[in-house]
Amino acid sequence: MALYAALTDEDFRTVCPELALGDFASATGIPQGSINTNYFLHTSTGRYFLRHTTVRAAADLGFEASLLLLLHESRFPAPHLHLTRSGQPFLPMRGGYVSVFGYLPGEELTRDRLTTDHCEHLGAELAKLHRVGNSLVGDRANPYGPGLVRTWLQELAAHPDEELRGIARECEDHLDQVERGGRLTPRGVIHADLFMDNVKWLGDRVSAFFDFEMACRDELVLDVAITMNAWCFDGAYQPALCRALLRGYQDRRPLSADERARLYQQTLFGAVRYTASRIRDFHLSPLPPERLFRKDFRTYLARVRALDAMGPAGFEELVFPRSPGSITGRG
Figure 1 (tube, rainbow, N blue to C red):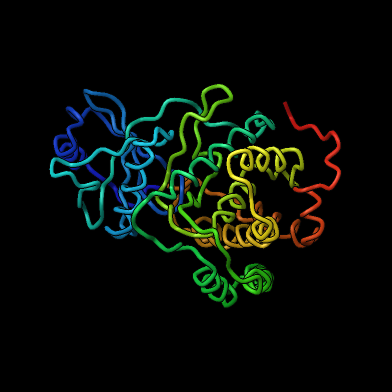
Figure 2: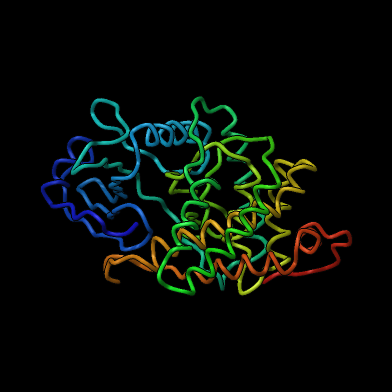
């Protein structure tokens, strides 16, 4: 959510009446993320989150809107999307589309405060999302699947920087391993980007999942893998956190034997995917620091190398131990 397009006060004054948000007061840009331009929007009726995108097609935004409506109807904790006067989920503006979401209560966790209880609650909510998503009508293929990631790696393999060329070749070898594992069912609606800054909490309770712009249909276990990578690695994979996440998830939706076997490959794919995207979107970005909060690709490269070192058998023992013992986590 970096600042790629500078919206003006006049733009905000156009948005507010069109979405019945009250009178415009002020807007503050948010220099985080990698694709969109985002603002906190303040009006006479409250505080909102405004997103401007030039890279999402109308069909993609429509899929996201349908999912958010379903989640709202199902009482799942997710953002309220404000519709235009004509009932559309977005407003064309400055070569892209504007979407506006209600402000979400709660706070984002920092890693030093994360406990096994948090991870268990998180896993349960993720499983609930997957179950609710079963009734969604409509489809969107994963826009960040192995094919696109391979294209990124091939481009980086030709980069002038010798370090980046080496990392690209290393990651492409791992991608080959992932793709040899094939694909499986069950598939369904996944969030696909459930990082720590995409969840809000009230105490130890999840108050909201948000930032559903990458939501799509893919293997459900991929969502588990992405979430594990984001929440359960701190210099190394934390066994207690990984197991708590999976325990909470499987209390609501048990993984099949095939999914358990596939989790290693999907966790490895997630690590490769975010290594490559962070190189492209942050490390190589020309934007100055005040317009883009950078994220270090090396943290995800560390995940790739940790997974490679432990292999499938070591990973299975980490997350599905034969004798769980009494491992305790922080908190």
